[in-house]
Amino acid sequence: MGFLDNKYLLRSETALALYNAIGKLPIVDPHNHANVKELAENKKYSDPWQLFAATDHYVWEVLRKRDVPEEYITGNADPEEKWIKMAAVFPEIAGNPVYEWIHLDLKRYLGINTILAPATGKEIWEQAQAVLAIKSKRPQELLKEINIEVMCSTDDPVDLLEDHDKLNKAMDKTIVRPTWRPDKAVNIKSENWKSYMDKLAKRFNMEFNSIKDLTAALKMSHDYFAKRNCVASDHAVVAPLSADADIKNADAAFKSAMNGKALTETEASCYMNYIFGEIAELDSQKDWVFQLHIGAVRDVRDSIYKTLGPDAGGDVSDHYIDILSPLKKFLNRFDNRLKTVLYCLEPGHQATLATISRAFGSKVRLGSAWWLCDHPIGMKRQLEYIGAVDLFSNFAGMVSDSRKLLSYGSRFEMFRRVLSDVIGEMVELGQMPYAPAEELAKKMAYYGPKEFFNL
Image (cartoon, rainbow, N blue to C red; front, side, top):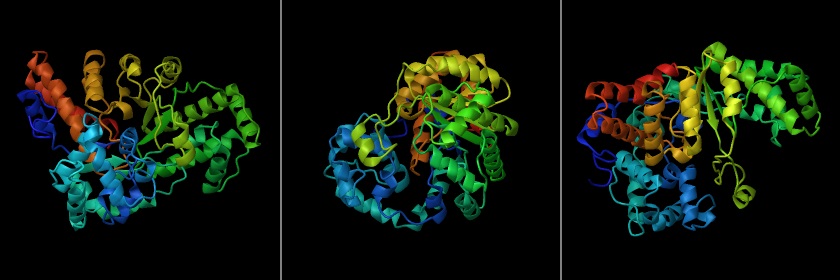
């Protein structure tokens, strides 16, 4: 087997046959962090670093592990110098999925088969520069080449979504849909919460005198997104919220925070649980999918946080977090009336999420192995467990969760290959015939997510 050849990640002829059946299906990506403005403007990429690494936290973190100075990662160094520094250490990250993703991107979309290494960094930079100068490698043409049918960006409730309209008009179809992400409204513990309340009130020309005013503004935003083809919300929480607080106590906490008073943990929790429940009610009424990303403990490395700010690396998982108690209350409140997708950052929580998904029927589904688990090992383990405990047929599907355009191709290719290998192994072991295996693979790779997310 050669590096990234046609049998990449496929251990049998059956796996290869399955991949041949699903590899070229269009991509439906229900969750990513696309720069929609960049896609709408459709300018040529200035250099390979912009396309391959400027927004990719995975790349940043492996370079830090090899002691590349921050100046050559997120700093002000020249992009070519950054690329050369990456090439200098790239052989040392082999075994990490970043090594495969970068080479997949080079090979599949730029036609560059040379291995990135200290001696080839300059050569690949020049080759990539030449390819990126071609009009067919601008963002909108790359979307077509990658075979994106539809993708869902991540957007704040105050966003006007004008770039979405511009891109869809240019592509002559609804290729990007917004996703409603109200985390800033929910997280009353954030030091920026009050300023965000002011921003949200201004967006809808309101004054927030009570929590009912806030929920009215959120509904206006929710309706606005719905008119622009939104079909899902997205929520990042360390632990799930139970959504079982009453309005009286939540309103008191809201008014205290709006007046600048510090809240107790109980008061903050009451507010957050109440708002979380109201948001889920809005999704339920419109048959949206409520995506719940659980378990990211953010910004644990002080030096990165202090110099670069939030979400620049240093995020970890924690298997001690109690996810079952609040999640049980939440799912019981919305039993059989809210489509919910559970994404798991901590591998130790996967069994809990798989079994609770099994307990709550077809509207509660497992999302793809997420973030620190979205590599061949993590995806394989998750898929094997889903097949044994839950049902392959009810899998919510792959998401890129990426800011980088080429990732929509390379990450889906990696997933589809792992999926083909896992199901192919079951065929090889006599656990199912080939025909239903191929139908399962097609459903999990494309048809199932498209239907579940109303795409």
